[in-house]
Amino acid sequence: MRVVLLASAEQDLKELRSYILKNFSRLTWQKTYSQLKQAIGNLVTHPYLGGIPDELELIQLTQYRQILSGKNRVIYEVRQDTVFIHAIIDTRRDMMAFLMARLLR
Image (cartoon, rainbow, N blue to C red):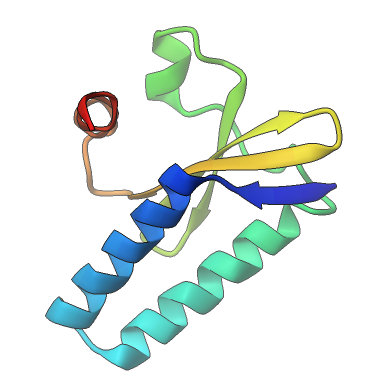
């Protein structure tokens, strides 16, 4: 499988980096980033590793899956031979509020 990080997920990653560097430390960012890279790398060989997020299943967006990496959710979609990473979200954030903000962006 090929993994593609979409622009929306790249923006999420930049925001996450800024937040962690501002509120924690460079070491915390490096650890978080390393965990995310490993989790996303696992999708190359195990694309159906993650389950469907409950919030997305409720609104019948069942083509999306998620994997957890530390305190973050990686929301992705598998299409043919490609895994598209759509979002990287802190597990403590309200998913529906996040999606609404994303729509309004």
